[in-house]
Length: 465
Image (cartoon, rainbow, N blue to C red; front, side):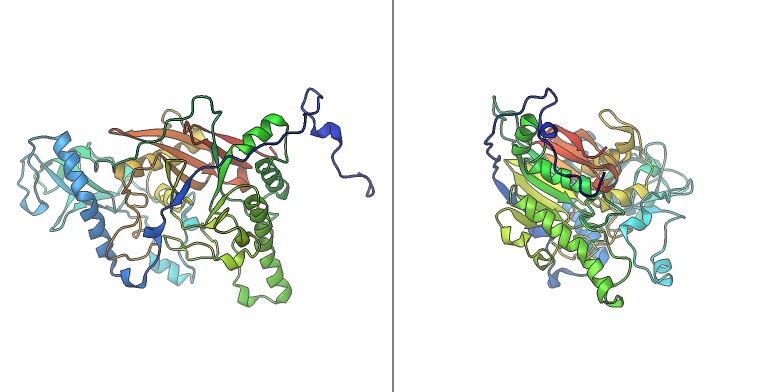
């Protein structure tokens, strides 16, 4: 194209495919009641102790629901502490798993390399082997688990469960069946309006604003125009108006490769450019629709879970919309929108689980490329714990008085950002049903997720591909 050629789109480019221009529309943005419940993820100087206290709190929190599930599944079967086990006697034992893995990286290796442990360091890698084994530990002792009733590859350290079986001659516990804690209570979801086409929440991750090498600036602009109603015809604008909230599930920025203090002035300005571009993007969105911004791996906040909100000073323009239409949130993020309970992460928990398990089964309703993500998310729902590998292989704070990652209230929607592909699946545990959503990395897929708050069905919207 010649340098002086016009870059503005013609009227024909803005018309529907049938060539008929739309009449001017006045659309009202959908509005839903919103409540954030991130208090349990806040950091307090008085809550830190030793990591064994976190495991103890996890067991104490889940033990009542585990006993409830055991009584319902195996009525009349004796429950025994590990110390009181007798060879050949069928019984049930309850406790916390420890997975002995020969290939598990040592944190000492990270210190030798002078590099901190990050969730991205294990992305795409597998540390499972045929020599892995499981041990169940209660408050008094531990015993090695064997038998066909337990699939070693499908578990990780930190899972609280019960097993039924017996001690065999070599002192190991032969497992026949497994039982997980009963699901946490779930609130009743409002009945959807009979005539409403549906209200949506848009889930996205991996925007990587300002990093042209990682993310397409054109795709970002198209996504922003779509949400604000400046893209497409009447149908697309109607759908855009139904978006009641945008949730950015991590990866909004790309981490600088070197510390800022080691850069000269020009290099520091280049590092700050992504922040400015993200601020512009968030400001544009927040002027039209409420936005939740979650931190993720590599973002400028603490890297151990739970991650604290990105500081408002990073977004001088967008923060002017706070708290009405812009909120910087924790990771994990727990909120209610229109009577629907959401719980989500930026994906570190799923990526870490993927490195230490081998669970892919391509279950019903899952895209092949998203199967592992959904299988792992389903496992955490059944385990009633979002991040069981913390603190063993996933960095977290050493809470001494609680475990903020156990599921204390079953969500209607459970999502994980920064995943390789979109997928969703309904997971039913007893009378509780949760929709698991794999939110794709936008920088790699150009896709976001539109979730219908009324029906809990969702679909991807892809830009530039």
